[in-house]
Length: 285
View 1 (cartoon, helix red, strand yellow):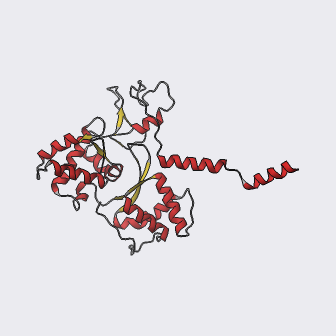
View 2 (tube, rainbow, N blue to C red):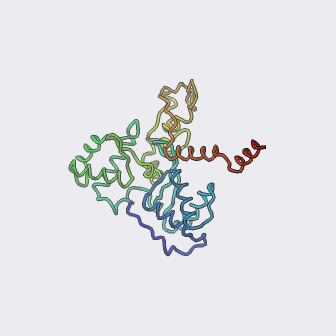
View 3 (cartoon, helix red, strand yellow):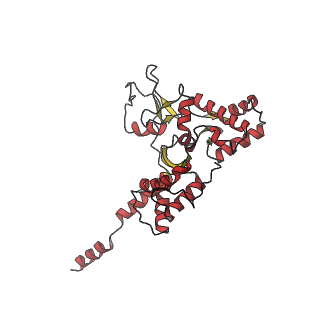
């Protein structure tokens, strides 16, 4: 992303100073840019235990608030958001100073930024929140700044994916979770006549399903669809109550959250040494 805040020497504020555990957490966020909720919780625990700080599993938000208070003068923030693709919660280190793609100007040339804007146009105009590589390559021939050759366009797209502005799957591109979290206000303002919010979570809805009632037309993220209609044999639109004609996907669970659940289950079912010893003494008697 081209943004490297300095951890040492923060501006003097009335906020609580950063401990070593906070600094380690921030350093990891700077390297990764975005991590899912399960990894954020694991990182919180690791940072606290590594530096002997007090750890409470339900205090991650408060832990991050301490970091954000120090990041505020630098117009940075660790923000929490939901992924359109899998419905999972993510934490991302975002730039709050600017609201549009001009923040990328230090890393991308003018024609590369124009390509990104045109890619955003294609994604927003689409029915499924994606743009095909073919359509994006065609856009490269109509750039007003400086046209890009096919290989150059592919290189720019790879960089945008690597820098976590775009996601790519089977040749289709979508706005990444981090991009939406950081540019949501810009997207809402620029595409105010096209972009709708999810009826369930109220965040920008690009990859979603839409009610086919012409007088309704609400949008719901696919993961929100999975959760809202789970177990319902007669799915109805939550707004107009028309039949919901789309396929209801399964609720997605990440491998990390599954492993956490399995670990918790093992801990809950593991025999207590004390109770086992008591059982043995009872049997002997």
